Structures are given as C-alpha cells and as structure tokens.
Image (cartoon, rainbow, N blue to C red):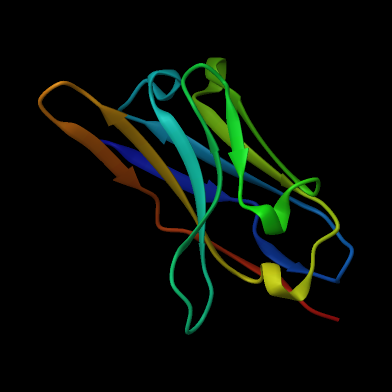
Length: 119
C-alpha cells in the first residue's frame, strides 16, 4: 500500500520559515518525480515545486528564491524548505509522487498539511 504522509505545517508569522516533509512508503521515491502542491480556499490547486528522479528542480515564480525542494533517498522523504513566508502562501500543502511508464502512469497523493501565514 502506497502512502505519502506530510508533516511540518503550522501557523507562522509573515517572514517566518517552515520545513515540510513528505514521507513515502510502498514506493521507492527516488524513482519518482515528487512535487508539492498547495490548495488555498477558493483557488485552484497550484504546483509549487517539483524535483525529478535526476534531482532537477523547478518552482512556481511566486516562490522562487524563497522555497527549496530536496529529497533524502535514504529516508524515502522529500522536503520543502519555506523561507520568507507571506500570507499568500497560506493553504493546504500536498505531496505528489508520479512515475510515467510506457503503458501507465503511477500517481499518488498525500492528505496534506495546513500552512497558515498570519500575524
């Protein structure tokens, strides 16, 4: 059974930092492209950051220079370091793992962790 379990969310003041973690089980996460999405109230789910199996990273423009995605293959875990947080970063952050094969695509989601940036 595949599970992605996010942790590290919480309430933080503007300008603060949080580090999110996504622990994978049932898959070898280093083979997957991993991503962090966020879902804010009344808004569409947004792709925030991705890291490929080859460790190439990409970010949505609004978080470039503030967020860093990384992976720890030994622990089957992906992290999202979030610095200089802004109120508009508020939302539920969800971990995604995707592996595209020749005949199928494997796509898994975690339950999410709430991040609230407010004074």
